[in-house]
Amino acid sequence: MASDRRDQAVRAAVDQALLTGTEPVAALLDVAGIRASAAALRAAFADVTDAPVLHAFAVKACPLVPVLRLLYEAGLGAEVASPGELALARAAGVPPERIVLDSPAKTPAELREALALNIAVNADNPQELARLDTLLAAHGHTGSPLGLRVNPQIGGGTIDALSTATATSKFGIALRDEGARARVVQAYLARPWLTRLHTHSGSQGVPLGLMVTGIKEVYELAEEINAAAGRRQVDTIDIGGGLPVNFTSDDETPTYAEYARLLATEVPGLFDGRYGLVTEFGRSLLAKHGTVLARVEYAKTSGSRPIAVTHAGVQVATRTVYDPASWPLRIAAYDAKGRPKQGPAVDQDVAGPACFAGDLLAVKRPLPLLEQGDIVAALDTGAYYFAHHYAYNSLTRPGVYGFTVRDDGSVRFATVRPPQTVAEIVAEAGGGHPDALLTDC
Ligand SMILES: *Cc1c(COP(=O)(O)O)cnc(C)c1O
Image (cartoon, rainbow, N blue to C red):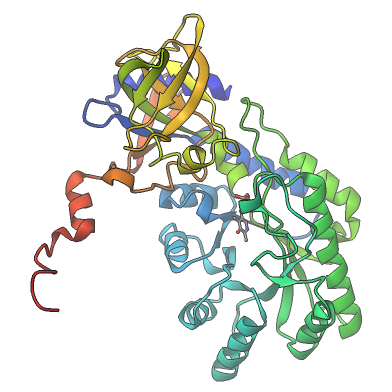
């Protein structure tokens, strides 16, 4: 069970000195859990269709090269949205035919590189289509499958910042705007090389039913384009990612299988073999398999509330600290040796190290009373947390370690990313040219 593996890994992280006085934060990734999620995703779609499906992991959810490599070996690809993400996917050995480039702000240089590498591109808007026209005219042809992102404008979920299919979302072509649908059809008829349609209705907070509605709209648009073209011009539909993650317990719900079955029921034409599919899941593949561990440096009380001051705060849990109502995290308490902490639950705050009052991982959280030297674990942090370091207070990026638990219970760690050093912080902060502002510019 995932929670047993986690307990074994926390104990081993203490025994094997991943978490020390000088490295008071460490992040763990459960390799078996990641593999299981990748396998569950592939099985869920294989169960409902024989059509070819590329599962392109949304690199932004966990931009770490060994993770991308692990997922590639597990049969996945990569969805990238910046030159950095593309470079990470390539460094992981993901081949061009398994990479998809999205992003609402691609430069001509990015587009040129993608076309030269034969990487699939989803254009965001008419101006980007015009750039593709120019590039294709200059180069004759490309092996890149090319598509267009549309926004079905079906409405938002519970988290505004992550709802991408609202009436005024910045992503894709807003399909319900006056005349937009007809213009999209015309854009396809004028460009025989446009063979894909793409949508992504949002991440965490968008209910499955709403995601399915968005995909259904895009499927119907593909049918309309193909009818107008008199051929199967659109041959692949990219349904995006966005499966929500349960942050309240160890249960992995909803499942990929539920989502695939719901899609197959509501949009059967998507799975009858006429269309290839691309998916772009991120959070749901990684979130539950990551844990941040941090030492309790001090335990104090303030206004008679107990506060555990730890080393994990805004730098590793940025969303939770700035928007705690949308992003509550589960916290598990361990003693100094890494054993699950026992004792009656006491309401207490779990604070981070940063110098502002709001740097709290949890407020009034019932946990066994934390003491100096104990360890707190921030659970479900494998996506969009420790891989998304925020450089407040020049806090160093923690090391990230993958772990596997052997049959005999022993735990093996592999370094995914070494801890950042203070010397690296100085170098990245202009340490190499301290006099830069003293001389005349
Ligand atoms: C962020 C994003 C994803 C991944 O979303 P998750 O909620 O992590 O599954 C997929 N596609 C696009 C275009 C995105 O922007």
